[in-house]
Length: 181
Length: 265
Image (cartoon, rainbow over all chains, first blue to last red; front, side):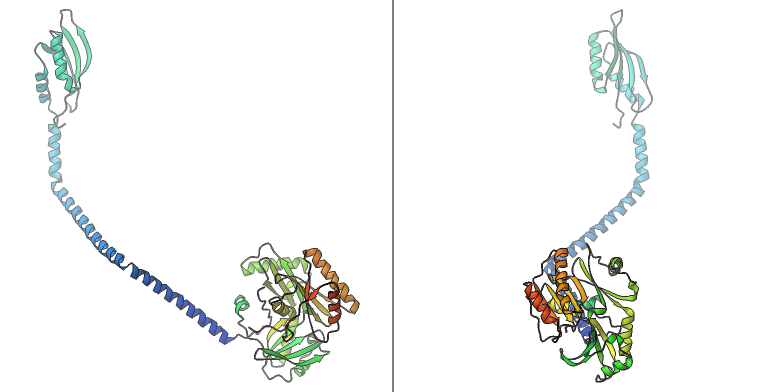
């Protein structure tokens, strides 16, 4: 049982010496704990001194690298500012050059073999446009040669028929890539 | 106050007065030893006037720090059980007062109410009338001394006996016709009963009635006891005989200590 200190007198007197003694002990203990904590922390620091030094060096290097990155970024921005308009202009030219109707017609002409004639051509004046064409061939063999020439241009045969006079007719669709592609 | 309960911040008086029902005993403390100086029969501290009290303390040096130990006749003890005692003091006080008000018919605000945690679930509540306290303090103040200790003999006996090497299952404090019995388990009191006897043949009945009550209510069968009384108490031997006849064993106490005076740290 914990001791029961029962005293209902109104004028209790404090034992000053005991209070001072206990306060002093508490203060000394507190200071001792603080000192022990400081010593312990500094001991830990001493143990890891090499790692701390290395960490400092790495931190230094890291900040150098960051500076370098920032420097490169600003240079890139300057280059972009200087060359940006010229690049844009060049891209515009390339875009323009990417499609030429006459080039496509020249190519088509080269692909048509002997004995095959075009009777219908539809070519939209736009980049990446599909070409629809109708052809007549005097023989099935020549028609096949034409198919073979067009095979590399995504050819689709829409219709194929034999005419009364022995001619072969076909409606095709091809796609010739733009120049820049 | 909480701190004081652990390390005793307050000074112990130079002189003690033990106040029985109708007598006073005066003790002097010297180097942690108490010495009885005088016994004054036929005087009740509660009926004393300031003038008469000055006669009682006429041999005290002026400005003496006096301690007064009262017997339990004017104290009201309650041992309360709780499932859980709140940690915060004001909550604890509210809970205890709520429980006391259920069993105590008078206005608790007229009493000095102190409580002490005995164990995780048990609290000792002590009530003492405020106007009686003021009266006693005025007596001493009028005699140009300082009352720095006002305590209770039964509580001091608990401190001595229940913290000793051999602890009895109950002890009985006998002060003339006033008997206070304190039952304990594992050094923690669980029941206190206070009663007066007018005649010798009442004692045995009251004691065994109390023992039966304790056995029936708390399920414990006390086997050992201790007696504390003035040497010349006429009931002491009678009680000893009665208890021994019921095969209870007496635990002797330190006879060279005044067990009802506060212990010296």
